[in-house]
Length: 510
Image 1 (cartoon, rainbow, N blue to C red):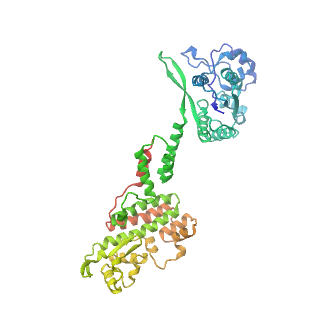
Image 2: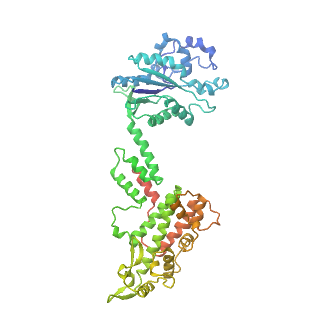
């Protein structure tokens, strides 16, 4: 069953003339709280043919039970809608007319004033609309008159939230065929009603077309009106794009991509840029050479990018991912910093009859930082000699410890004892740290939730502090000192403003 939903407003019905107004008004005037409606104003003082207007409630009370005078009335907005249906040979099977009645929220002390919104209500024009629709739609569709009646004092039809709730409740009762089109005419009534009807229709009905009336000037420069359909796809597409933009800016590019992939007329270059950001958030670089992943430039760039990414996760209270990435970033930094420093060591050793730089005998593999496999058959003394030349603290650790955090920080400190450190890095690299305080392990191995205060304790590696904001703790006590250390070792990277980049990508979708 195709449906046409139409809102009603104070100016939907006008008078062609005021010849009968005085006598008809006199019959009901004693029943009105306000006596200010004895005459009706002309719509356009310069145009005598424009007609007259009266508050909808008063008009309905005056003409409602006077069918012999209905020829006095004009329905300009409804006429344009009717012409559209006739021209397109469309026959809505059900017509739903939304009326308003605010009598429950206004008392007589308020309704004695002609400007009271009570007088703008359309509930009393129902008989006039019934006559109009039955006259115009002679094939006799099903008619339903639904009244929006607010009950919350001080929250009338012009209240956006109250009206949205009323419209949702009213339209939720409708049965309809999802395969049929629902036409919606929302121009009449208050802006709150119009917006609510649009919003609820988009969310509830599968196939919606907005039937609107547009005024224009014809070839004789006469102002006239014409109805046309605004495709739901344009409205729905616009809403989806705005939703996707907010997801991108908020750090959820994958969710935004899912939305945008379903839309038409989306710029492919923008999609490509978004896909790259999704890969970035997933720490996935499909177009890079995997052999370059474990090099100083590539790894440093990943660290820098990850520090920005961690900020997004912490801001979203996605602490599991943030803390896990932070641990990985710290471990990667130690390896990159060590490799950058040992590369400058010129010492050599005789290996298999040839002189080789010791810096070439340390390798970074997916399993970690170790001596070259070519040294596996060599003696422990030979390996220690190489490690000692590489400034590894051989007096404290064995050659099997080169990839352990406590040995890595000791190694880097042995190379340069002045390099910038931060409390979490030092605590994280302790071999005897208290596992009860290791938030990463608790979250990773137990799928536990965590309070903000515990995250701050972890980031500061200290429970005696006054901080209450996770982002402040992260930026001031982790990210800034982390960058100080990266810059101290002159590790190469390109700094991009992730927020700015996300905003630019979001703005590219129109």
